[in-house]
Amino acid sequence: MNFKRILKIAGVGILVLLVVAVAGLFIWSATSTYPAGEIASAALESFSTVSVSHDRWIVFTPETNTEVGVIFYPGGLVAPEAYAPVLRQLAERGIFVVITPMPLNLAIFDTNAANAVIQAFPDIEDWVLTGHSLGGAAASIYAENHPNQIEGLALWDSYPPDSADLSDSAIEVISIYGTTVGTANTENFEAKKPLLPQDSTFVPIEGASHAQFGDYGPQKGDVIPSISATEQHARVAALMLDFIEDAIP
Image 1: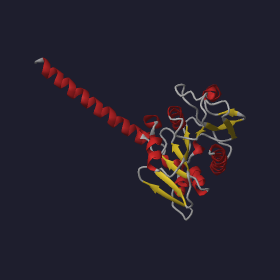
Image 2 (image 1 turned 45 degrees about the horizontal axis):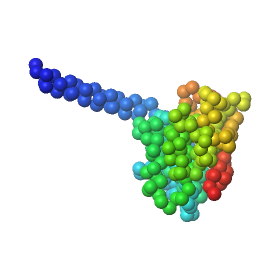
Image 3 (image 1 turned 90 degrees about the horizontal axis):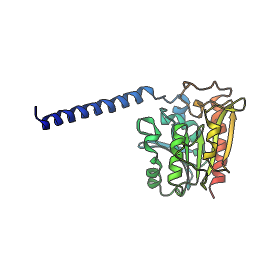
Image 4 (image 1 turned 90 degrees about the vertical axis):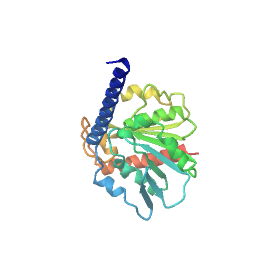
């Protein structure tokens, strides 16, 4: 067998392995992703005050014109629709909201997803980027690399990776997180606070769970919440509305 033939066979073999690996990733993502629950499904319905579209992105358009928008990065292996309960409440208060589905439901594979949203909706002048869990980490990376594109960053039970040090950033930041008897539920949460600006706002929600920032059922390794999902959704929405009002000049 000549050398060229050996290279050709090797190349075909590598290609087959890559195809199998990619197919495996898609199957793993599809079978591992937490689906949205019934509360989220109801929040995705259009009503007189909010129009909901589900095409490239999930878009909540309030009935009144607005120049303020929220871009949301979902948590890892969570259906993007699961975050509709909180985000719809923002839209009902006049905030334009866009949820960005992610490749393999992992936001880390498209940290720059906000760019396409900002370009697609030029009438929105001020954006707040928001993310839950892994989505918050990806949003932090975007905030570090594009500080002039957004007015604020909101993290839900999340913190930046070490590669996204925002300690010197001028971006307004809020971190909303669950606690149990006063202790953050998210591992390493306290140690990662120095990665955010010194004037960041940290707001604990006692009794909140990781999964109840959305609506996708119990999550492996999560705490048992002592407040209802409805209460947690309402409190997160209220905190977000206050933050947006303060962050947007």
